[in-house]
Image 1: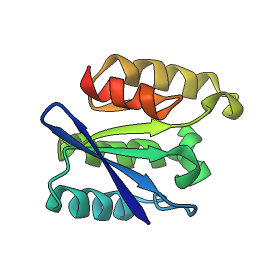
Image 2: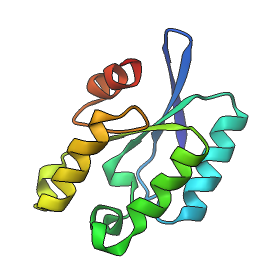
Image 3: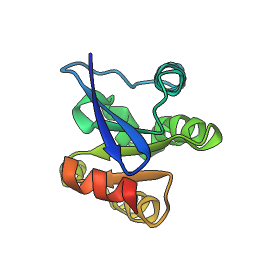
Length: 119
């Protein structure tokens, strides 16, 4: 796993670069949060391919449980990917509502994710 650092004003964002799934449970989320917060990061950028597919099936509750920890520990998260492939109205609505806030954002590209983190 490689961490690419992006500086946005005085905010330090960690983009995780890897080919494997690194987020599939609340424990994975807490480990990631703790590790990156300890390294001084304010925000985390993950790619959809690095997140277990059941995260995007909202019926499983996986997304809610993991994202609750990000909110609880006040760590912003951007997830980059093409979410249209999931063909879920419920997920589309969740992404729309999340993107209205500042804590959890979904983006189509790194540049979009960085802009969202700055908004």
